[in-house]
Length: 300
Image: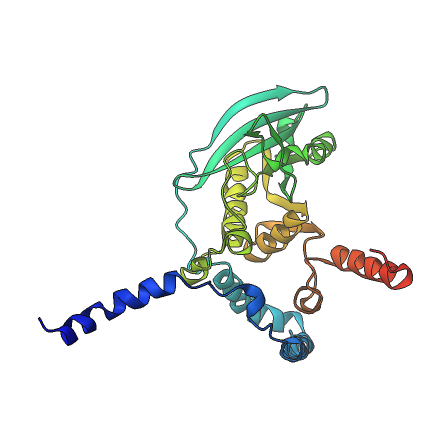
């Protein structure tokens, strides 16, 4: 092997060794780009598109007949956005009651069921203390929870514990109430904020969204309520606050068994989401108050 050939073969290694001895580029050495003009242009584009979409939303719906003709397609679109088109097969719930607590005014059952094989949903069922067998069954409320994790000694009791006073109120007033945990804050903790916190953007490539899991858990919760002899299957309602408010909207839109829906927060218009960057109207009002205080006093 001659000297020239040897030099060619060793060149990559020599360059690598030389690079090791050099100081790496420091962040301060990299010029900071001013993206404010581009940022403003993108923000303005989204503001205009949001305004256009809101102005044309449901513009073709003038009558009840118009709505009935279109609602099937709207529901399909929502199911697609939730990753539920086509709907999963309804497997055996394998429901189990694992405990029972007697209160002076109502009874609470601890339970779980599987919304899909191996996907456990934990919950509490609140029942009035006295149920008239001749009543034909009581109206039932599905209560869906927002943020409210309860942990003691490293053990998750589920966010249903935060909202237990609501289940008690319904039972005191003659309703059956099933309160279910959410995906990330249940007794069995999963991941809801995969894209928001953990960079799991491949979820989108798979057509997966945890919102779809929550919606499907609600559908299966109604299936469970239908198995209970205390319940009138024709009188289902849903309510919840924050994230539970959002789930209330979704399950009411995709399941006709819901006769009354009372979402509490957790939902708003497109402008609040896209332009203001808030999750609901309450958050926007708080942001506006904070910014007003800042403009007046210079302090947040």
